Length: 69
Image (tube, rainbow, N blue to C red):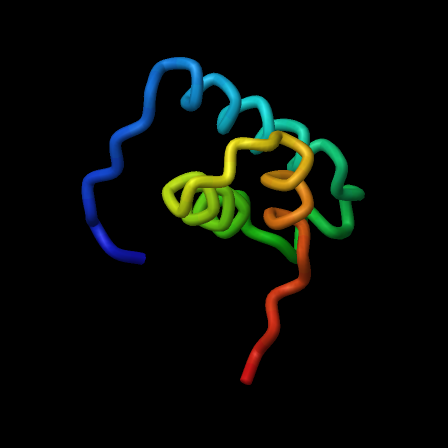
C-alpha cells in the first residue's frame, strides 16, 4: 500500500467510513477471520478517489473478491 495523501470532503469521509463499517459487518465471522479490513478500506478509497460516490457501488466494490493473476 502506498503512503500517498488522499483528500476527501468531510461528507465523503463520513460516507466512506459508513460503507467500510457496513462492508465489515456484512462479512460472516469466518469471512472476517480470512479477510482484512485494511483491504476493504483500500478498495473503497481507491474507488472514491477515482470518483465513485455511490455508497451502494462502493460497498459492492469493497466486497468483490480479489482477482489474483
